Image 1: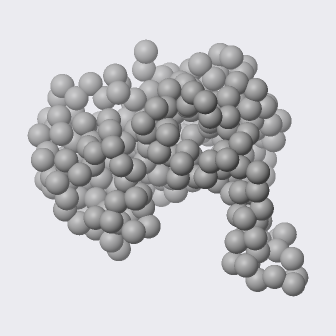
Image 2 (image 1 turned 90 degrees about the vertical axis):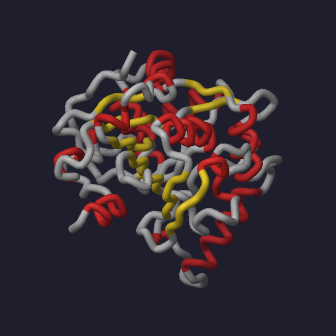
Amino acid sequence: MDMHDRDKFGPPDDTPILPWFSGAYAHGFVALHPFFAVEGLDPKTCEHGTLVLSGSEVPAALGLLEWADEEAANRRVGKDINLEGVDGAAKRYGRQVSWRTICQQADFADHCELDQALRTSIGGLRHGLADAAKSDRLSSYCSQHGIFPPNEGRFEPLMQTNLATVFRRAGNNRLIVGDEFGDDEGLVDISLLEQGELWDEMAELPQYGVKRLIAPDRSLLAWVHWDSFYTLILGKAEAFQDLKIASMFEGFWCSQETQTYWLTQPCIPLVE
């Protein structure tokens, strides 16, 4: 697999990230997707987050897609703000709430345990690793305090401006944007990503969502895993000079052993 393909697909789940790229990137930073609050918005009256469905629950009288549409419609009942409205408000007015704060106030030992709760909530963990009690505790805490949990598998609205800043600071006026598998990919002016609009609403960007940002010289890559609550930022040593990534995102630096599913590995402390 050449480097272009590696940038497309990312490493397998059980493979250390940096070695998988065969030395192409010297550093990797795991930027955690932030929790957030918006003044005047109550999460209980807003449509937000992944609609979790199980194929085993499909009624015999309905097809899978018809049932999914019906469940999505049911979720919208009684909600004052739809998904797009929440995302727009988050990007313009959202106040970030750190994972560190949630851990301290909701009694999670560390960000790995908090990640376990989040991924349990979307059905993203296998039996034996999922923890429903932690997921319920997190949901209850967020509901009580008017906090929206993050979403998985996308560049979060609250992070989009800073992601564009990372590439601009590294000397890129243009960058490659791509969907999850590289089927829809193109070179755009970075000023497009610096606007206040949501990236998913821009006709110039991939129709099914931006999942990868790549410097034209392949010196810098930002990538999201489809069911994880973080953005991975990888770069050559020279590309990372003076970027101060840890001042823009909460997270931690990858070791040579860090895998995509770092939840199951010894916890690397968050950057202070």
